[in-house]
Every structure is written in C-alpha cells, then in structure tokens.
Image (cartoon, rainbow, N blue to C red; front, top):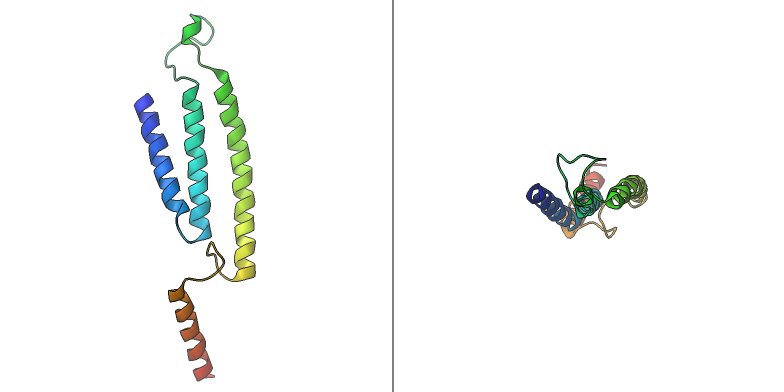
Amino acid sequence: MEFAYALGVGFLTGAGVFLMLRGRTFPVILGLTLLSYAVNLFLFASGRLTINAAPILGTASEYTDPLPQALVLTAIVIGFAMTAFVLILAMRARADLGNDHVDGHLPPAQLSARAEQRRERREHS
C-alpha cells in the first residue's frame, strides 16, 4: 500500500512541476493544484496506513494517527478556496491584459503573428 502511495505522490509531484513550468496561467494553476494534492497524500500517509484493523479494539500500535487526517481535510478545503480565487484572478488578468501568459507578455512568435493579422486588416480596409 505504501508503494502505491509513493507512486501516486511521485506522479502528482512530477506532473505538477511540469505544468508549473508552462508559460500560460491555467496550466500553472493546475500544476499548483496537483502539487497540493501530492502534499495532501504525503501528509495523509505520514499518519500511517493501516488496513483491516479494528477502529476501537486492539493494541495501540494498530491505530493510525488522526491528526494528519484532520490536517488533510483542512488543506483540501483551503486548497479548493485558493484554487477558485486564483482562477478568478487569472480570468480577470486575461480580460485586462488580453492574454493569459504568466508574465503578461506574449511570446515573440505570437507577437509577430498578431502584427501580421493587424497588417492584413489594414490592407483590406
């Protein structure tokens, strides 16, 4: 079970870092969300994973720590609220700036394509 959790955390971390390195706003937000999911899984697994143990009866060594579970539940709620806020902020920035590039400027290839489109519009009018 721990190996599956380790693979899940590793995959989510790798995908999150990959998406965070993109130049557009939406993939960066998705990358941050995936990283928060990876941290949540890591915190959840730090409380020890116990399968088929009685929740009330048994020795103290069979119990899982409930604190990481409470922290993960709180982190899920906070992460959802922050993701919603950042998405609204990104949509507003796209409306104000006209693009969704992370630094607010279009890459040179898109700048030249836009300049070409404007030139064609002027020629046709």
